[in-house]
Length: 306
Image (cartoon, rainbow, N blue to C red; front, side, top):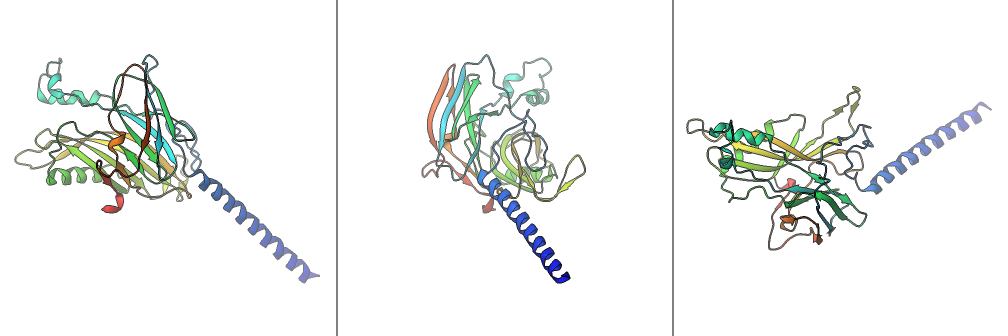
C-alpha cells in the first residue's frame, strides 16, 4: 500500500512539473509570437510592470494641418514603431543679436533651450504609418524593427569634416557618460571639426546587467536598450588639443527586453530613402518605402563590425 502511495505521489509530482513546464513554454511561445513589444508610451511594461513615460514623444500640434503617411516595406522583422523627426539646425551666428547673446559663448548657450521633437506615428498591421499635426518643414524617419533599426537622420547640413582625433574624442566622451548602460555603440557620427565645431551621433546603449526596480526588486532576465541622438561640441584649445563635450542628448526609443526579445546591441542602417520629406499644410503621402539594402546610396553600420 505504501509503495503504491509513493508511486502515485511521484506520478502526481511529474504531472505537475510537466504541466508547469508546458504552461511556461506556451507563455514564452506566446510572447515570442509577438515578435517584439510595439512602441506604446504610457502603457505598462509586460516584464517589470513599470510604465514607459508618455512624455518621451512630442505631441502633434492640433493647429497644424500638415502630416505624413506611408508604408514600410521589406522589413527583416516586425516593425515596432515609426518615428518622425524634424530637421533642425539652428544658425548660431544669427542669434548673436539676441539680448544676452552678444558674446559667442552666450550665443552658443541659447541652443540649449531649443527643443528637439521626436514624433511617434500611428502604426497599422500592414506596416502603414500616419501622423497628423506636423508644422511645415522637412522631416526624417526612424524605423525600429525587432532585430534592427533603420534611419534617415540628417546629422549635418554642412560637409562632414571630422578628423580621426575628433571621432576618437567624441567616442571616448560618450563611452564614459551614463554608466547605467554597460554596452555602447556609435552608429554614425557627422559634424565639423575645429573650435566650437558641432557634431551629432546616432548612439545605441544597452544595459545587460541586473536591473533594480524602485521596489528594490532585482531583475536578471531583462535588458534595457536606448537609442538616442547625442549633440556634441568641440571645446578644445591649441594647448589642450582635441576635446569634445556632450551638450545634450535626445532619446528616441527605450525598450525593456524580456526573454523572447532580441538582446544586446542590434545593427543600425542608414537609408537615404528615409530622409528629407517636406511637409506643408496638408497630409503628404510618401508611398511605399523599401528599407532593403540600397546598392547606390546610403551607408550601413553594424554593431558587429567593431
